[in-house]
Picture 1 (cartoon, rainbow, N blue to C red):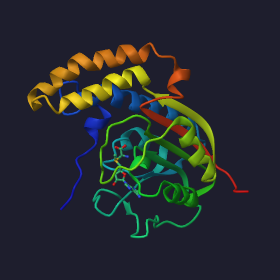
Picture 2 (picture 1 turned 90 degrees about the vertical axis):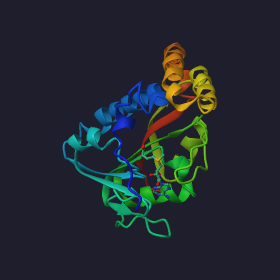
Picture 3 (picture 1 turned 45 degrees about the vertical axis):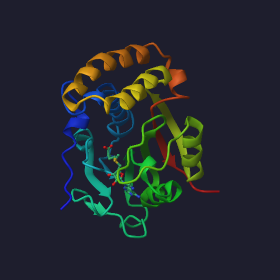
Length: 237
Ligand SMILES: C[S@@+](CC[C@H](N)C(=O)[O-])C[C@H]1O[C@@H](n2cnc3c(N)ncnc32)[C@H](O)[C@@H]1O
C-alpha cells in the first residue's frame, strides 16, 4: 500500500535533517505561499473552499486551513491521503464552478498534459475563482511519479493566460546565481556518503542564501528556481 509521509519536513525543514539540501529553497517557498495566502485568501469576507490540486503529502494544509472553510486534497489514485482522486481520464470528480481557490504547488511540472490540467482547474472554479500556482523554473529532474516540464517566466504566464486566466501576481523565488549553487549541490550531493550530506548543505546553503539575497527581485521575476503566481478565472473570448 502506498501511503505518503506527512509533509512537515517540507514545511519546516531542518538544516540537519532529511531536507537539509533543500533548506533555503523550502523556507523561501513556504514564505512565498504564506505571503500569497495572507494577501489573497485571508482577507476574504467569506470563508473560501480551496482544493490543493496535486496535493502530495499536503505540506501546506496547516498554513491554509485557518483561512478557509474547507481544504480538499486532489491527487492521482496512488495517493491515499488525497480526498479526491482524479479519474483515469485525468478529470477532477467535481462539478463545474464548485471552488473558490485552486492551489497547485510543484505539480504542474509533473502532469502529463499541463493544458488539460489547467483546463480542469478552470472548470471546477467559480466564475471569479482564483488559481494559486507554483512550479519550477530551474530544478533537477525529480519524477513524482513523472517529471515532464520546466517553465520560463513568460512561458508559464502564457500557458496560464491561454488556459483562461488573468495573471494578477507573479514572483520568482531564488535567482540564477543562487540556483547555480543549488544545482551544483544537487549534482555533487549524490557523490557524497549520505551521513555527510548535511555537512555539504551546511556549507552550500548559506552561500545560496547570500547570493539570493544580493539578487534583485526584478531579475528573479524573469529567471528563477520557482515561480509563484495568482490568476483569476476569466471568461474565454
Ligand atoms: C512534487 S509533488 C508536489 C506535491 C505537493 N503539492 C507539494 O508541494 O509538496 C507532485 C504531485 O503532483 C501529483 N500529480 C501528478 N500528475 C497529476 C495530475 N494530472 N493531476 C493531479 N495531480 C497530479 C503527483 O501525484 C504528486 O503528488
